[in-house]
Image (cartoon, rainbow, N blue to C red; front, side, top):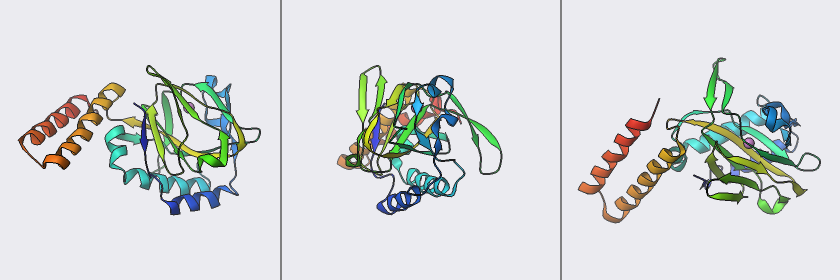
Amino acid sequence: MLLILPDILTNEDLTLARSLLASAPWEDGRSSAGSQARTVKNNLQLPHDCDAAQQITARVLNGLNRSPLFFSAALPLRVFTPRINRYGDDNNHYGNHVDNAIRLKATPEGHTEYVRTDVSCTIFLNEPDEYDGGELTVRDTYGSHSVKLRAGQAVLYPGTSLHEVTPVTRGERLACFFWVQSMVRSDEQRRLLFDLDMNLLKLRERHGECAETTALTGVYHNLLRQWAST
Ligand code: NI
């Protein structure tokens, strides 16, 4: 499932991010790529522990926590520390690849934990008219989808998919990306749960709570109980 989440970041978050990124300590993005991805990756990233990255990722995590759509679609168990990247000039693309299935995450308590990359997320930090190219292109069984969103919007897509960022030929593309280990590993099962949840919301808006919405809410939770691992 490919899903667009509006307004993960506020205008205030975006203004802060832009001012921090103007003088941020960018480094070669290949440091966090697996061996196949490294051969096609050519962008810049922020060290995850620099001040700019920490301030921006805190805003991103707050934005995700405010989003019921993110929760319903991703059913997050663990969220990998968001990373910030820049495409432009001589470091302007990331060729076709699949992300590593497992990432090692440093926790705030000083431990490490594994995160399985079930769901990938990109949040756009600048506006699409500020650069040419830089589409996120995701290939799945339904074909190829190109995504280029307003600043503050996010896209969720299956971690299993082949994807690329096409070359930025004018300006710079600033984005944040991370992975989610979902309580529900299967993209198909997450999609069914998401569809059920969204349609239940609409039914309630139209008819209020009734015997059928109560019963279907039970179906949702009983499916989640069968499919979720915590
Ligand atoms: Ni990737």
